[in-house]
Amino acid sequence: MERGWAWLLPVLFAGTGLALAGMLEGVWLGLGFLLLAAAYGAGQNWLWGRCLQHLQELVTRLVSGEEIRISVPPQAQGLGLALEELGQVRRGQLAQLQAEQARLDALLDSVAVGILVVDQGGQVVLANRALGLFFGVQPPFLGKRLPEVARNVQAQEVISLALTEGRAETRELSLPGGRYLEVQAVPIGKGQERGGAVAVFYDLTRIRQLERMRKDFVANVSHELRTPLTAIKGCAETLADGALDDRQTAARFVEIIDVHATRLTRLLDDLLNLARLESEQLEVQREPCKLRGLVDACLSAVSQSAVAKGLKLEVEIPPQLSACCDRRLVEQALINLLDNAVKYTPEGGVVRVWAGKCGSQGRPASRGERVEILLGQKKDEEGIVVEVSDSGIGIPAAELHRVFERFYRVDKGRSRIQGGTGLGLSIVRHVVEVHGEQLWLESGLGQGSVFGFTLPSVP
Image 1 (cartoon, one colour):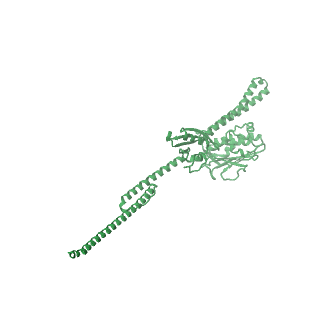
Image 2 (tube, rainbow, N blue to C red; image 1 turned 120 degrees about the vertical axis):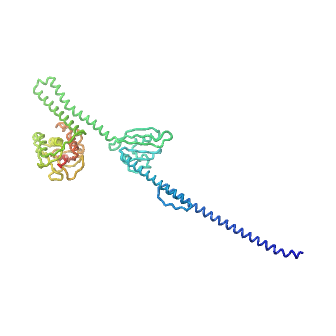
Image 3 (tube, rainbow, N blue to C red; image 1 turned 180 degrees about the vertical axis):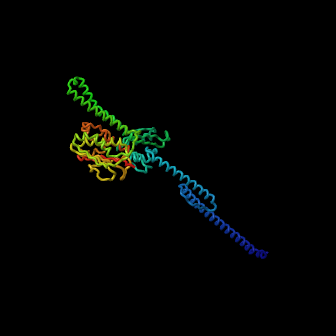
């Protein structure tokens, strides 16, 4: 019986081996599938990671407004299209913002008012071209500190008060070179929410100059009026006290009164003429005018004084030379120039009037340094030139730039003795200015003077 069961053992073991072999094969297959699944998952994760990183880079570039091409896996085509649309919208917004910024910059740079915006730390957020011109600072201004842009201690104090104390402040500034500014600084926000300050700078230079001119004008007129009035009053009082009984003394005092009354009349006439020339309602009557006849009429007004001093009057003007001008105004300017030439030329000297077309020969010789006053459009080889020269005492170089100012005299004592009002050359300047022409002066101490101006030629 034992032999009978023995033959079954090999059979059983053989069957078990087959079963174990099948099981092992299944296990290895399962492990293989698991490894493949893990590798596939890792690959997918890596691919999606790369894809997400790429998308992140694309979004960053889109935000900056860069135009790009988007390539994504087929599974993310919808996301790619959305990103492309987002990029187009973003570029449009950036273009609009850049255009608005350019318009704002152009607007700020076109105004004559200086504008400065700083943050709470005093760093410049915005500034325009006018501000840079006021303080002599070149752009760019963004990011600079307040003292680097507003180069004035008072201006910095005003803006600092707006930043620290949160209150509006106004102050007038005096800058080098005779410039005056008014600064108004206000804080941005209130209380704990303050975020900086805005300062606006107004140029008051022209206003202060006009105020100074007005004060100088009143002071000069008062002085010019006081001297002859004092003399007239003194003579009248002396005559009233009994000098009328002395015919010789009375005649001398009457002569003094007449001289000073004439001086007052000339001063008032010059003031009225100057006021009329400066009036905006002045109408310039331009018409063809032969210069030789005009100059001869002007010379007749000063010929008596010239003869008394033994001066030689010379005229060099072509008979047919004509200019298109206001005869009455030009005659007034020429009389003032000739009157000055006669007054300041010593006995036996020469006063010469020359006129010709621009560029023609025969002009008076140069007299020392030259000062040009450009009152209109500069012309090249066009129009008519008129020059009055003398062999007089001349003008020092340091005074050349001021002789056309009202009441300015190089030699104040001598001018008053000779009866000058100090307004003659200012009238000349305004006559030339209303014609839109040029005016110049050449002179040197002891070398005489040449006053010249241009006039439009006849069309």
